Amino acid sequence: GYWLPLLALFHGSRLEEIAGLEVRDIEDWGDSLVMHIRENSIREKLKHRKLSERSTPIHPKLIELGFKDYVEAARASGLERLFPCFSRGATFGEAFVAHAKQLLSPAEGRLVGRHCFRHCWETARRNGRLDTSAAQYITGRKMERGSSADYGSQAGLCVLLDELSKIEYPTLKFGKAPPVTAAQLKQQDAVRKHALRAKRGG
Image (cartoon, rainbow, N blue to C red; front, side, top):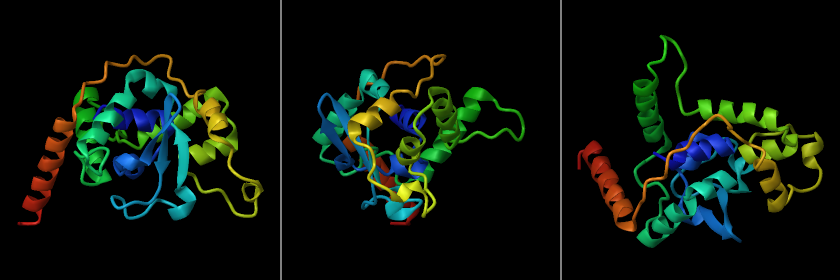
């Protein structure tokens, strides 16, 4: 519940993309990390299938807040899922909407949802003047065939990190990340599996 909103806010990722990450989808890269969004055993497919697959550095703000510690705990747990609380993306979306409405008390008809973070990212992109093609790649948007997208290859990780670092939210204050252990993640996974069995009547 702490890291998923931040991954969405700083990377513009879709709900099912980040809720469906496997531990192996996060790799070390020097002092930072790289996130591989790709089809795996958790999520059946991506929005644009292979066209949505991408590898991007983790935003420096998340490294600063301690995301590497969470990843290390997930690796030590031996689990497949990076976020074992959620059986599928929708479970996080539903939980987030309920939580946000309780905190914000939005007006009737006001849109509140996890997808709002993707809209916030786009505003931050414009303010940061990110390179358009890099922004399209970072967010996994489908570019029209026959355009300049057909030329060359995607920029390297160092360039992507430079562009991603332009995403800023200067008015936001971030609370300290809650410490998480491998044992706690295993317990979360056990609770998830129990809930699934109960839902299936077994």
